[in-house]
Image 1 (cartoon, rainbow, N blue to C red):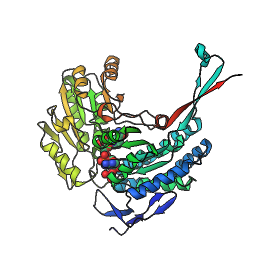
Image 2: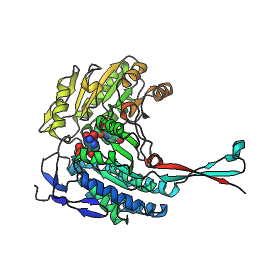
Image 3: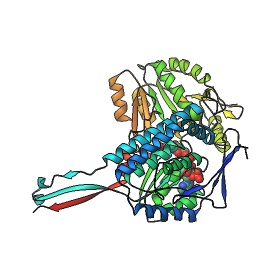
Image 4: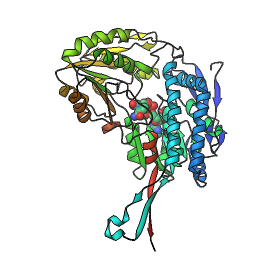
Length: 473
Ligand code: NAP
């Protein structure tokens, strides 16, 4: 264990608990053990659900929930450097990207606080129907119940924030299972919520055995909603196993970008270089497939390659690193295998720099190559020449994914055709589809998911309407 390694306990019912069993958290860059975290199983998860149930028996008024959320924003601001370094250490995320994530979590909490203060139902126009004459009706928005939250490794702070903050805004207690590779940011966030005055049981963090914890979240009837961000097979299986619960899924993508012949090509190349390789491509909306109209193809590739070659590959703890490690050796070997097996031409990268995969650009792979149709989740993008924007839209739609897609064009017609024709949850125009601002409705269609996150939308999911009908005297 590294000399600086720390021990973290679970957070259940307002107490920090040991279990006698430990989970080691290792740096994806150096392999050093950064910390060991008390490992939870089914018993601790049930205890967490009990604590959440007790907490919800004494609801917190919206103004208190909003105040706590705002205090967390302040704490994240004051401890920004520590938070960013923790993300960088446990996820192997370059510090500059970790800083952006830490700042975005402040935005997520801020928007959740706004939602807490404006949470309200609707008036129902009762006399619009003859049967409703003489009656007044309105809806209340009630918390759905205890939320079971499961989060991935790649945004260990802000994707946890996208679950904890809206749940508190909605008045729901949470049992959170963070990714085993990156539980430290989640535990820190729970600590900040506790310090901000959150009473016991409203947030519980159980890191550990995924299937054991998942089984409790699926089988315990007191969990009314599961919010899951991660890979498709795990997410869809959870949904299948919990037919009576709301199961909200935020899953993967094989993110496409179209560059039309009339695009600002230097802009498109810059955005692709920035957004295909940041955090070694381990964002669900990392640019992966670029379809370029033939008229702009040579210019695009000539502009892209020097930008890619200029990216600094190295230690994620260095302020100027652009591309660090992928999460573990298994991921690295899989990505290298996918690069080796492509029929396309490797224009840049394709190999290792030390232990790290160099940013890789592959020209014109076959549509059924893994790099064309599966989520690479690594520092790899493909560039493919196409005859028309219509062909590019068809190819972009040609996978099972549908999270976000983008187009670069100066033509309104192309932009609107893409906005209408791309089967994705979000379409960006003259911006990389990696763009996300935390208040946006963010989520996918097809295999990429079935919900929208962003505090306004998540709070809507985490509440349900109760109708009240009043007979007027
Ligand atoms: P993952 O392997 O599916 O893991 C996600 C979470 O699920 C982890 O906490 C994991 O726990 C847990 N898990 C695994 N098996 C489980 C089970 N049987 N029951 C309950 N929980 C279980 O995904 P990942 O590798 O961490 O993340 C990468 C994926 O997430 C990519 O596909 C990416 O595109 C997607 N993603 C989507 C979004 C979005 O907003 N749409 C955002 C970020 C990432 P352990 O860590 O203990 O295995």
